[in-house]
Image (cartoon, rainbow, N blue to C red; front, side, top):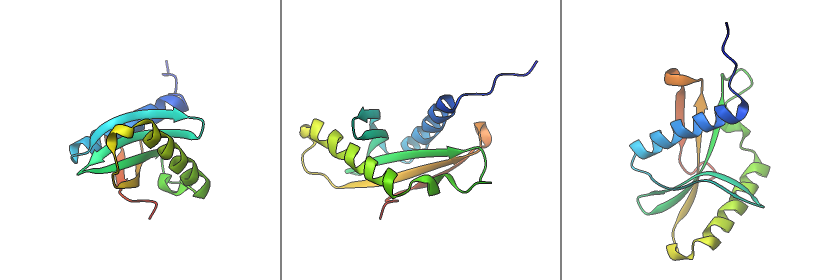
Length: 123
């Protein structure tokens, strides 16, 4: 008997969990996850040495159709920036802080997945 294939939602949540563990292992303190607003969604928000990091997690089973980080196009970056503004407006307690936009690309599944963290990916 074959096991049912995970849904896209389940794959995404698994990739986010892998990304979170990778970031935390590198010293990023996660402040929020899956923040949603009318402008869009932020997968992970963290503090890395005093810099706020808005992290987009992208995953693919393989790279036949290209790397997952290549799917963060100009339209997606615009939506992430707008969602980051909304998150910052809701968190006035943080004051003025430096911010950056990172991407974590996950290729493959399970323990053999390759994880690439790209800090300041929008620069």
